[in-house]
Image (cartoon, chains in turn blue, orange):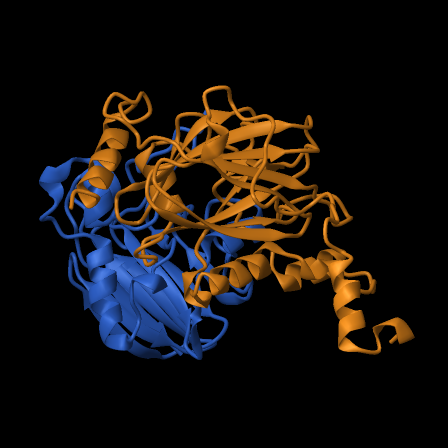
Length: 211
Length: 275
């Protein structure tokens, strides 16, 4: 019996297990039927994530197709993560956090200059991670679209006011996503230090793939 | 084939006899509009077109151009793809648009932001107030499931994703360039629990939106039913599009100075064109 609390109730044998350091990226295939478990090791760490069809990377995660199909902005257990062709890429099969964001997008050097000021231009950002991970694989800026922010909290008020606020995640909480087709998952372990999405202190996350 | 068209010259005459045909949805060349704002010189008119239900149009607009959209019958849905014309890897970013402006809804004074920290377009006027950054557009499979009733030709083919693909293709772009869109004239409101309530109308005829191009742009505008339109029948009405030349946004512009984030988006645009 394992004493590792993060692998409890995995649906199959572990085929990949890796800790992604704070501020780093991760790109990895997940085959149809496999489950990716993401563990927020230290709590309130935004995990920016995009999904591509392994067979055709012009088919990729679409936040808009996903929220329109479920009629709700928040990603919860049971949410089907759909492609720009409307097809299921992955499904959230379990989450110990109530809901996750998919409207906030990824931070970038450029948007940071708008949100916080030009003094942030030398700071690291998710789009930097995405590009660094994608260019060796033949993908580029055209492949970056609205993403998922696991463990990130973006409420929308009645008057439309929205913002990234204190997280609802905690150390050791996790989310399981099952691949519905062969996919490639691209992650930026968010390096943002100017808002509460990472508790102002980016921390490591653990990626476990179970077959 | 009829005997009248049995030779090339007869076919030519038949084709040429269509000259001057006027239909509800078509471009007017050269553009003519008898309802331009009083301060607009008719010589600055760039574009006059009515986009058919299910149709789309593509255009390049220069920085400063004004784009007026009129929901002629109160039931159009203007879905946008927006690119920086000289570097189309820079495009509309709906996530940054809502996040940077701290608000989920578009309207007068709001900006459409690119993924490079710049403002692509701004809303000078908005009589509608029902717009949507979240729902995207329909596709062939969804349209077929919702509207396909065996009719021929199948109108369900006329869906936003298909229109976007054709539009970006004619700009020389491809599938990877179709990005999350905004829908004007059809709304989507968000409840506390994240639930999306579509606001589809139909609305009063003639609602008008005026946008200002803040960069040199390539546009694709599709006019197809909103993806969450609850009506069982495929329903969308013509969209009138007019554009005219206008001045580049000056330093004292109220939208430019409406918020610190807006000002920095304009500063980034001004820096981009500082050559």
